[in-house]
Image 1 (cartoon, each protein chain N blue to C red):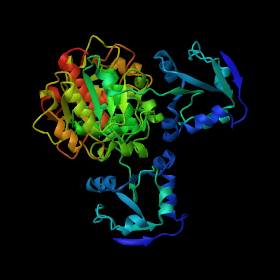
Image 2: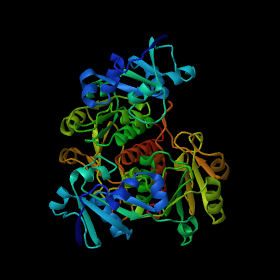
Image 3: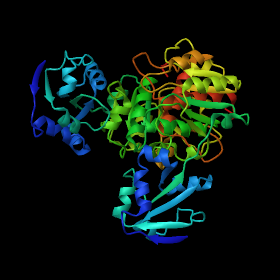
Image 4: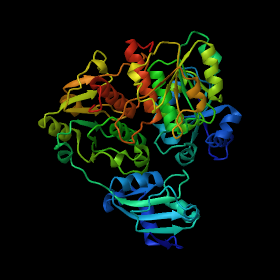
Length: 268
Length: 268
């Protein structure tokens, strides 16, 4: 691996990294940031295309034993003070990389007989989106759709909360609920939507027969009218009587758990 | 309700609010912040002691139809620009309040025959802590313990993620795992701990007989040695074979869901 010291904060790579803190630059360039050795290693292991790697001086002198350097051609080494400005989080870490985003289509994601798709409607919070992607991977879902109006799937907080799961399964963005669900139904999917109002239909009594699309409503507004209309089954997670509700990523994870439990395997 | 315009950012109430962004001030004063009308209303409804209320000028002129003003003695009205500095988040909201923290003890929380306690070990991320508290309330748990080393339960991000659940059930902080679990065992609790290594013991096969303590390990390090030792049962949530794992709040929520499902009621 070639080591290139960088002393100016105005270096083009560093400028690019700082620009990628913003969604507009990520969308325009088709690039995103990998912060920390763990995420970088996971991305490299999954064949994500990594363009630039920058390390802080103190991280570099520690020898970086936790970074798989076999697929990294060049590294830029910068002063810790400059490095700090590159990160989107205060969590201590000495390495950041620029990687190419992956564009997935819904048709590609289901064409190989994939049969469990999680659909999050206009998910706003990056922690929720990332946690949902992580749980979807853990329970063997085939794909996650974040409908139009959702947070950017490559938002640094989504990437962090997904803990590498973003590289394990396709995440499809930019479509509206109606389009997604009609395409899935045409491909033979049943649509199961979580609706806190469906109190007479507890989750555990639902059928998880696949192919199955699991729909989760927006954090504030719940299910859209389109999702309500398209749903073959509306189910609820039983909760205590007060005004309690559950976080959307928690809801999705519980549905996926129930699905896995009923099938006794992780075909889900 | 008495309306007091405040024009100086150096006003004592405003200074106090800004100080309460920091844990040290919250711990010292026994006070915390309620941001937004929804949380403030929930806190008032649950009898939380609210000391100061500050609204932005534009929020005030909108008449504040969503704020229950019956239990508010006085409101400070400030310019929007000053108000913005009081908030810990960029989420638009025109009201913030100072409230008194509630100190709960473990003995008080279980003395009335309460029989399901969720124990989170050194939970680091405020979103995780808040989401776990929210799920615990939703599934009817009696109390949540965040062991020593956890994020401050009154961290603004915890308060937000808990969505009012912080006022619905006692959250006990500052104790170490060993102390908590030995006290619970002495009171007749069984200890069920989630351990990703317990692959031969799937969650659904566990007994949820109460009184029950559910233990969740720290995000990075998992269960402590003390928890491993104290556990009557170590169980795992079955996941796909790769290196996947689940978020700690998701894990806790799935255990609580399973508990509720098996009992068919929300005695959990």
